[in-house]
Length: 302
Image (cartoon, one colour):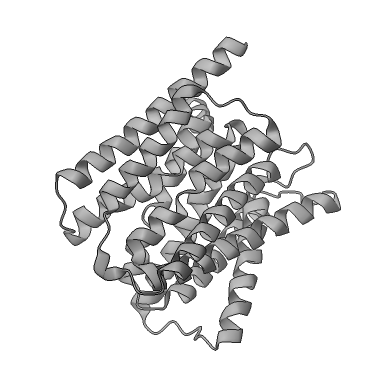
């Protein structure tokens, strides 16, 4: 039974969606805590990184790898730090709805990187699925024009930078677990998280942001955020990414904002209507269509 369960979660088409499900609770925990967005991002990767390094120590993982692997791991952490910082700034200019849509344009950048860098063949169904998924995301999140300030250009710039850096993060994370002499899973994701924490922390320090966690409830939310969303969630994703085409990986990551919308409706009574529900259905349909199309291409090649 244990072996069957392990084999089940070893499938990349299970591991990555499972990770996306777990990290979809991120906005819930951020909303429940009272700290600033930058502070929540810092403690997310700090607590997550510490948790993963404890798992690595208990599992007796060996971390002796070539210097170039360390370079890739550090680069992955830096891309994630850039992603978090750009996304928070985009939110400040254009609001959370449009910022989330812009950030998840990573699906196009990730597919493009996969085709250009790794010569991956993208099926016609997957090409059609990518814009459908983004349209679905637009419908389910919606766009409140009152959230968009006069600094929309800066919001768009930071949003596009978010998409590019997030895509680079996904690609580098996948490569960090695809090399022969790779770091073990927990150590790899743990070090990436701590590099991200150091980068975000330095930016907070230069801005004079507070590192204070004011209440016991905030400690609970932030530790849960780090342990489950950054630790366990991204460990699942990191496990599955090396065995997926880049375009499919980017598409599956759209489960995170789609599920986050569902939790917002269920837990916080977010008003929703036919457009939102249709948006969720369209995202899920696009993901299924993309996976089916890519699997058909792989089957024909074999």
